[in-house]
Image (cartoon, rainbow, N blue to C red; front, top):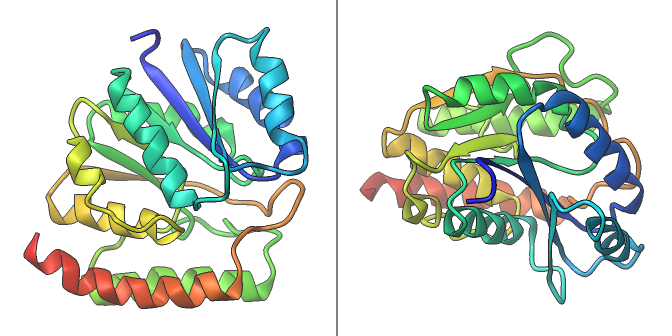
Length: 237
């Protein structure tokens, strides 16, 4: 194991967000770590930029994929890599500036006596600053929908989280079969159902720094439908 900490960041057309996120990580995380980018064949120069900077920054790793295969799929590829290389902590985050590295120290602190740390956008006041009314409504409704169905007071749809690989079995994470955004809800609820110790860290989530969201209306509809599928699926776990 080269380092104890792996920070996993999937990318698709995030060229101008790479440098800022790396700088913020460096300024807020004083441990030895690797950053693993999983790029889904970006067409804006993201892949080329990461390839260039990783030649002089050995802590940066890159997995190139030939086409867009889904954010959930990218997370699974990165998590498998982390387990294979025997990292203890696998931190996952977005590249768009919404997941502020300022929380990395607290995430790590929470991880030392838990199995999974997930960030929660609904416990603090004004935590979705700058978001449109529509985005706030959909995100909050999804949180309440999961809470109603499962009785789990968890912000399951967020990708900013930390897996303690010494405590969570890889096969349990991979029980989540979704390769899109529902991977986050499915994996969190599976681990919750299996009685892993989950801690939540209250965070603020600003709107993305640049670029546009990859989530469309169809993704939202599929997400709600898949959540109902999860409800029936995990009853037998």
